[in-house]
Image (cartoon, rainbow, N blue to C red; front, top):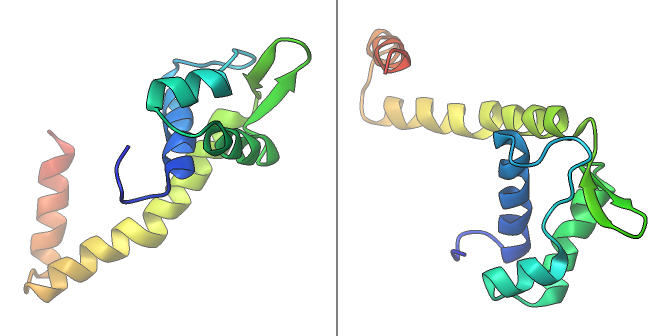
Amino acid sequence: MNGEKPVFVQIMEMIEDDILSGTYGTDDLIISTPQISKLLSVNPATAQRAIGILTDRGVIYKKRGVGMAVTKKARGMILAQRRKAFFERAVPDFIGGARKIGVSDEELIKIVKENLHD
């Protein structure tokens, strides 16, 4: 865990990343709260907070008597949220940074196109 973001946010992103990568599919059980706290050496309440938020958002649900599982709409929801954040934060930061150092629109477009082929 790093100090850039709150630990519960990092746990949420870890679970979301596992859903996006296919580690967890629809109706798959995710790692339990006690497992998270032991694996990452975090307070169980912190792990529970992350699980609670993902549940509230509809990414995971409680499978009675078994644990927490991934919803059918989880992957699409995560992708939509991350795309929105990318276009609202990363793209303006990228363009703003390029402008600060005098990169022209043409150079910027060329750099983006070149990097699409990597």
